[in-house]
Length: 528
Image 1 (cartoon, one colour):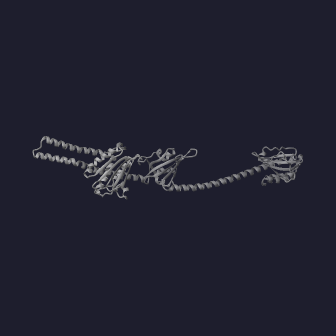
Image 2 (image 1 turned 135 degrees about the vertical axis):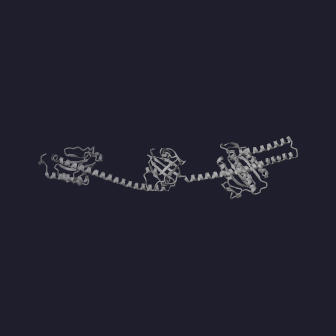
C-alpha cells in the first residue's frame, strides 16, 4: 500500500479513535463518536453499527434500507444475511469467543476506500475488545451483586439459625429429661443441661471425644458394665427399636442415676443415616420409692403372716377345746374307775379307743389348718364355693361358741383360676374383721350373709359378705383398705388385714375389693 495514497490527517484521526474508544459509554455512543471521522474516510458515504441485531446510525441524513437485515434479536448476528458488495462493506466486531455485531459501511467511491480498510478493521477489533471487556465487567457486576444478595441472605439465615439454635438450646436446657445426639459416625454432638448433670460433665466446654472419661455406663443391675452395642444411642444409630431401656449412669464425681432411655435414628428424605438422638428420663427417685415400697410391703407381709399365725392359733384353740376336754374327762374316768375297783379291760379298752379318736381329731385339725395356710406357687382352677366352705369350717367353732349364724347362698357354682389358699385368706380376713366388729360392739345375735354368683352383665364372679355389725363411718369407709388404718382400739387392730386382702385380690386375681355400708352393717364384695 503506497504511503502517498493515505491521507495522514485522516490516518491520525483513525489512530486517535482507536486509542479513545474505551471512553465511549455504549454502542450508540461509539456510532456517534465514529460518525464524523469515518465519514471523512475517502469512499465512505455512511456508517452504522450493528450490535446484537440493533442498528445504531450516525448523524448523516442518508440512512440505507437493509432489506436483507431482519434485525430482530441478538441471535441474528451469527446468521447475518448481509454480504459485502461493490458499495457495501461489513466488518465484524468479533473476538476469539464471540461475535457482537458489525461495522456497516456504505461506499460512494469504492475505489478510494481499500487503503483505509485495515485501519478500520483494527478499530473494529478494538471495539470488539472494549465491548467484550464491558460485558465481562457487567457480568462481574451482576455476579457480584447476586453474590452480595446471596451473602446477605446467608448472613440473615445464619443469624436466624443462630437465633433458633439458641432458642432450641434454651428449650432443651429447660427439659427435665436428658437429650443426647450423635452424627452418623457415632460422634457425640449434643448434651443438654439435664444430660450433662446425669453424666457429671463439667460446666466448661470439653471435646465430645473426652465426655466418656467422666462417667461409666451400667446395665440395670448397676454392676455389669454396658457394652457399646447395648448403649441406647448406639442402638438407635443402627436403626434398632429403643423404647424405655433402663440403664445406670455412674459419674466419676457425682451420684448415680437410673434412667429410662428412648431413642430414634435420624434419617434424611432420601433415607440416608444422619445420626441418632436419645432422651433419658430420670427414674432414680422412682426406683428408690419402689424399693422402699417393697420393703414396706415385705414388712406388712411379715406382719400379716404373724397376724395369720395368731388367727390360726385362736382357731386351733377353738377346735381343740372340745377334744381336749373330752380327753380330760376320760382320763378322770379311768382314775375314778381304778379307785373304786371298777376298771375292767373292756372298760379300759373302750376309753382308750375314745381317747384315740379324740386325738385323731386333733391331728386332723392340724393337717387341715396346715393345708389352709400352705403357700401355693402355681395357680389352678378351683370351685369358689368349696374354698368358702373350707374357710367357714376353720372358724365354725368360734361362730358356734358365740352364737353367730352364717347363711351361705350359692347361686352359681362357679370356677375361677388362681390360688385357692390366697382366696381363702381374703375370705378369712373379711370374716375375722366381722368377728372383731361383733366383739367390739357387743353384738349378741351376730349374723353373716354370704352370696356367691356370676354377674351376667360383666361376667365377673362376685362373692358378697355382709353382716349386722354396725358398719363403718361414711367418712372412713374409703380408708379401710389403706395400710395401718383401723377403726379398732390399738390393742386389737393393726390395720394390715384388709390392706393385704386388697393386695391379694388385685395382684393374685386382678380383681377388685369393695366395701359399702348397708342397713345395720357392712358389706364387702370380692369381684374377680
